[in-house]
Length: 413
Figure (cartoon, rainbow, N blue to C red):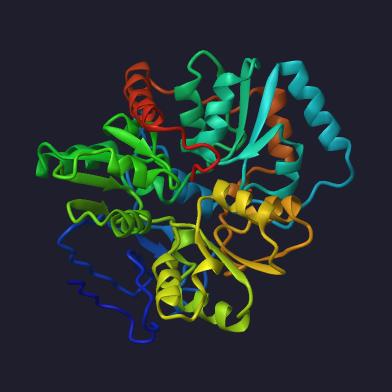
């Protein structure tokens, strides 16, 4: 049973999980664990539509990373409150900066990795583009002694975990992740204590400290395989993404999975109502939905109701979307994920029109890395990411157990 106390003007079908401005939500699930409560405030206040506005400013942090000073402001609060964050529309002029980036990278013996959600110019200048785990595994294989990771903090940590002997740089240290920050290592230990003997499965979108407290990691593309590898009678604690957890419970049919109520604020804002509006407006389009999205369940409902043919709806990781994009013959595909992914999809298949389900689904954390910040990182070797040896060793074991089950391949998040 779900109990909600919500703003009366919120439209039905939208189920956010945090406190947004003055609109309060209270959830009681038999198999769901709530994270520490956030209070998101925005410059324009509550929009009464159930969607998250572009720049939420948390008034309570979700906990610190391992060894992070108490007085240090958390990624999320600092990143979004910063008035110096550049506009996502900014673009470097000319090609000189790209030439300089490549020159500096060669000089520093560095490989540049860019996540799929980065700005287009960052993706274009990178040596490799993809999801965080695929990039981190690639980083461990390349000969370069320095990794410049254009992504968010937990991604750079993962690269360091898998490449402990290499220098890992993050061009913008304030680039955090709202999903990763919904759970801390202390939270995992407390949750374990409530369910002794349970197996803890962590989505790779978590901090190194959290990975170190878990039994095995998973990606959105192999989460079901990881769950199936665990004996059917074994109780499972799945963290931190509630929508991916719900997706895994649905496709595995297991009812002994407890799900942490975390979410990516960008994906949560791509909700069922918005999805239905776009599908109604584009009845012939294919639909690719990331399992972190709040609309994933609605997409499967539309298939079940016959509103959208089953062969036109795919719940995919970012890597899965890219593979599907390369092979589709559709005239138009609607994409339910962060809008940065559109750059890769359009490059992979110029004959198909790829359009966002929600054009406002843009992560400011991802867009914090600019051309200037990448140049500065290469010039000054900032900011170096480190992970304590003990934490890294235990986190690495969690990732390696996942890999032993089967490679996540091109999938990832």
